[in-house]
Image (cartoon, rainbow, N blue to C red; front, side, top):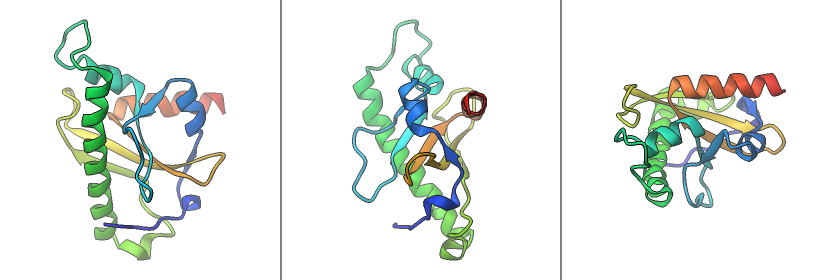
Amino acid sequence: MSITLDPNSLPSLDIIGLSQSGQIVRAERHTQEDGIPSFIIRQDWDALKTREGHEQPAYSDEALLIALEKISAHFLQEAAKTFITLGGHESEKRPPAIFEIESDLFLNQKKVFLLLVRDKAYPVICALIGSSSAILQSLKENQKKN
């Protein structure tokens, strides 16, 4: 399912700065040519690594990244379906930027949030994946810096 979005129709965020500071990490190894780069909030990445409740990571970075790559692709497909349900190409000028997706990815929450944003320096659309609390905290910290 392919959808075209105008980056200027989405809220801007300092994706490069968040990535360089370690607040977000890639949720995929490679972005497909026509894909949207996906990131996960660091706090949620760390929680997933120790998901089984052990002090030591339950999963290696590589194993987690492979799983997240599949999960983020699924979440982006769900967001695309929602986009089409909400009016599709008629809403391209003001597409929804926040999607709630039912998931057991985070043990303490029944929903995962996917935010579509554009980088503040470059016209690139990115997806942020995380729990509501981690995303809100990250956005607040980013807002303080800007």
